[in-house]
Length: 412
Image (cartoon, rainbow, N blue to C red):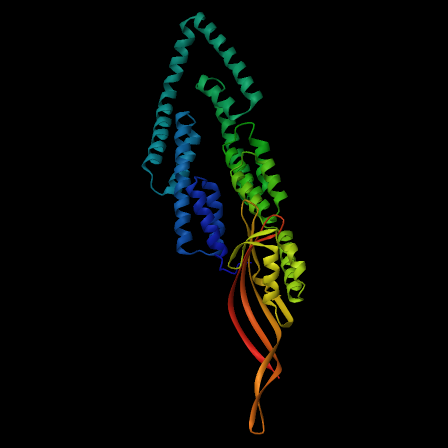
C-alpha cells in the first residue's frame, strides 16, 4: 500500500469538525472538536472549538426567539441564557431576557387588579357566566385531547388557542417537562454518540416532535456509513445504501462500491503477478499467454500487441538466460480501481539472472595470437518499478517498466 505520511488523529478529527461546521452540522462538529482537544489542545483546535461554541450560541438564540414568539417565555429565557454563555456577548439574547423579565413584572402588577376584574365579571350577568361555562367546556375538551396526544405540537396548539386558559399553566409545565426529557435523552445519546443511544432517543422522541430528531437521524446515518467503510467490503456498503436510501453518503457509498479494492482482490492480484513472474523466470513463455487478451492495448512501449508478438518478446528478453529469480516487494504493492472496474497496480521487483555467453578471447601460442571461444557466466541484478493495468477478468491490458538500478558480476 502507499507509504505516504498520514495526518495525526487529532488533525483528522479537526478536519471532520471543520467540515461538519461548514455543512451546518453543529452538534457533529462539537463532538469531533472535543475529541480532537482530548488528543491535542493546540491553538488551532481551541480556536475552532470557540467558533463552534459561538455557532451553538447562535442556534440557541434562534431557538430562544422561536420560543418567545410562541409565548413559551420560560423556555425562551433558558435558551437566551445558553446563547449568552456560548456567545459571551449578545444584544439579542439580552433583549429577549429583558423583555421576558419586563413582562413578568407587568404580569405581577396586573395580578392585583385581576381580583377586581373577576368580581365585576361575576356581577356582570348570568349570560356572561353561561358563555364562560361554554368556553370552559371547549377548553377542557381541547386539554383532554392535548393530554392524550402528549406531543410538543399538541401542547403548543392548545396554548395558542387558550394562552390564558384554566389549563394553560399545566400545558406550559407539560411542555417544559417534554423539553427537559428531550434535552436529557439527547445529551445521553451524544455522550458518546453511539447508534443504540441515538435509536433510543428516536424511539422516545420522534413521534412527539423532539427537537433533535433530524440530528439523531443524521448521526445514525454517519455512524452506519463509517462502519461500512471500515469493513472494506462492498456488501457492507450495499447494506448501508439499503438501510439509508436517502442518506447523506449514498453517492459516496455507491462510488466506493464501484472502486473498492478488497483484501481478496489484493491477494488475488498479487498471486496472479507472482505466478506470472514464476512462469517468466522458469522460461515457460507459452503459459504467459493466459495473462493477456488476444490483443493487449499496451505492453512496454508497444501498442495493440498480439500474443505472438508478446511471446517473441519474452523469448528474446531471456535469450541465453540459464536461471532467474524474480521477487515482488509485497510491502509496496499498491492497487486502485476505477469506476469501470479496471485495476491499476504499482509495485517494485528485484531480479537476479544468470546468463551464459560465448565470447572470443585472444590466446598466445608461442609467437602467434589466436582467437578462442570460451564460455562466460554473468550475474545480473536489477530493481524495476512496474505499473500495470488489469481488466475485470484480471487480464493485463497495460504494462510499463522503469529501471531503478542494475549491476552485473562476471563469475569465475
